[in-house]
Image 1: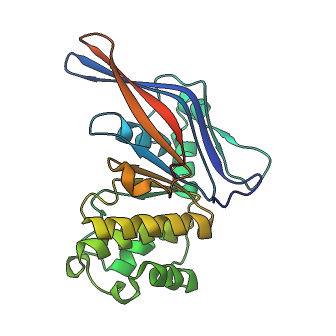
Image 2 (image 1 turned 60 degrees about the vertical axis):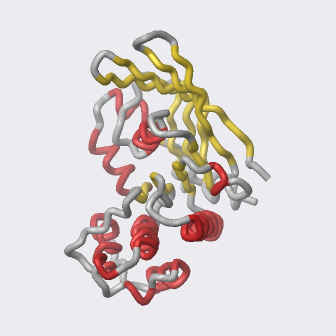
Length: 253
């Protein structure tokens, strides 16, 4: 069960569209509804090219939708929320950057650790941007939970693929984000490690009361774990336009 709390952090989208062009082709991503709340693990599944990364980029506030009825981010620590589309409309990059800094954590498909920094210094980077000290008890506790406490003073090149990915997850969590976005976090590992990583992300969502969105092509990994699974239906509208529809699916058990 999810660890939802009344009035907690949440992101909600309604009536969103994004048009992207590539040569003579036009790709349209349509998202009738998308929601994630604190303590939830939400999956976005589909094959390559269906729009998963485009959706993640919009959730990460680095890509502006072409059209949206509602795009709201509610911090959960007060009565108000942020109208993200209004910030895009007035090109308020300072406010958008502030939301990214204060609320978001991102796990790249390849981990994305900087090779010239130790694991500990990689993990500390997002917190330093926020003016936080990431050397305390919380870091040690999360490192122990993820099984990388003995790797903190090593360089990324000395870690296995699975250890690097767990270190990347720790870096995304260490500065206390409210929303963690993971782009194919299991793509570079075998099935056993993939299951372990998804187990870790589910446990962290529940125990840390973080909203977690995982993009994957493997729905089986999230079945029985995710609170909701969003998939895609692809329709060829014409020779130039492909419409990709986000479909809401309840937790698979």
